Length: 214
Image 1 (cartoon, rainbow, N blue to C red):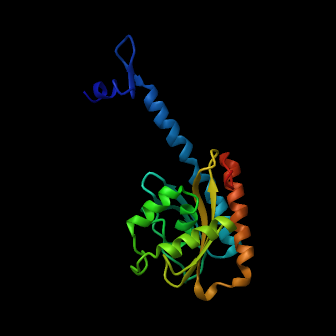
Image 2: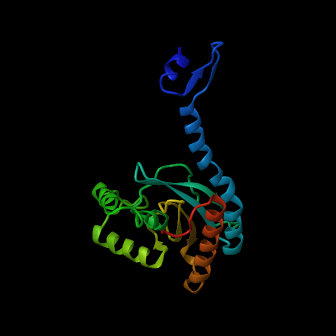
Image 3: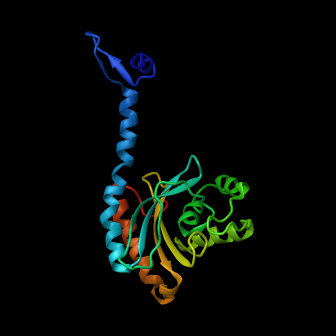
């Protein structure tokens, strides 16, 4: 009965002997999933390399554009006793933290305004969103190509994030470093951003995507 329901949708097809085989719609769906699935496998050694060089928590963040949300897909933790617990695969707002804002900055003006209309509060302390401050922040991110925030999503922490883009030039995700305030040294910022950019370049090269918008 279930196969009979799937047949008109193209997910299965039936041969002359009455046997069911995968249909074109199923192959298309499988192709989309196969295209997306390798990213964690490819990103794992890249995140580990950045983690080892920066000695801080490194995160792969992916954008869910339909929901205008993001989620942490993969993490690499340093051996420090003081480190952060990062929950993966949970939808998070785009308006807060370096990992979210560096994605929001490259969405359309209409999508940005939709996120602002949602008035999502800080996941850290519930503070209200300030649209003017957010718009200024997004403009600076587009100018510099990275985001730096402090204590917006994680307590007493600095976040640094660099975005990456797919073959069509659409933003897809970012690599992020999360660093406790007491370990963050501003003089290392350029070095840390350089590690993230190198990681983004490596990741997107292997995926056939782009590290920068067109």
